[in-house]
Length: 98
Length: 241
Image (cartoon, rainbow over all chains, first blue to last red; front, side, top):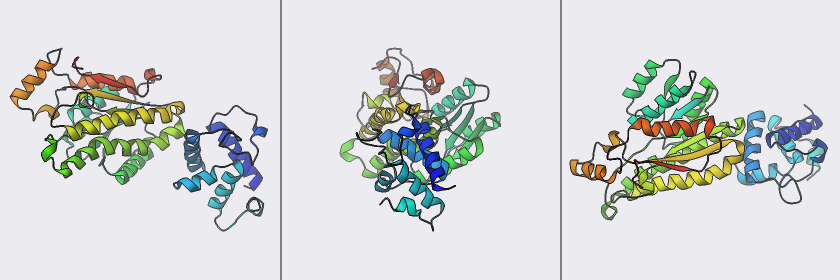
């Protein structure tokens, strides 16, 4: 699965897991998931996402700091899943965002 | 089909809860968490070979919880209901209480509830459904002398229940507690005749409770009918408190 497809899959996963009733296009790659400037998700939403990502991709986020960074946006989530699936590869596109 | 894990599955209360859950639906499945003593649990399992099984579980060990949950989920796919029923009491006055006794009582009665909830929650969150019923005690609300550790642990269970219930309420998981009073189980066997008579005199109903009378409350809290109840502590004590 390429990056774009993965991002779209994760975008759908976020919307479905958290039962968010916003149009898909409003959940852009870079839109913060948490905080007042983003979707305004909270720690319970984060918990659900951690479980959903583990269940679907086998990516475990046991370290709170790592989880916080990973759950920042659809883009960061996708990057983490991409790396988890292919540890030897880093997406140049995703990497350039740093 | 509803799948339930009852810890302390060999005790009389655990047995009654397991039976109530087996009776709740024709295809209900019950796991009995057992450790050293398992004679009653094995008998129940043999009586319902398709619907009741035993699983070795040291409730104080988070690693053992992970192993046991993995074993159960690989067999039946999920756990819908966790009944944290395992308990342990060692009465003694605080002034002379052995710190190890304190630790043992806290480990079985409080730490184990934490470990159990943490072990089942990922599955429940993923399925957006779950029922957790924690067996506390009347001692949490009306602590007698000699039970500082037991009462503290059981009161801790009520706090855990309230807090966790708020954390997972919107995910379809309910967390409630039951506070049994004097119930006719092995836990009362150590009472002297005098203390037993004093206990009976303190009960407005003038009798001990039966394990089945606690189990029926647990069964309700575990049911889909209890969908709007969470964070509750229900006492089942014949009217003492």
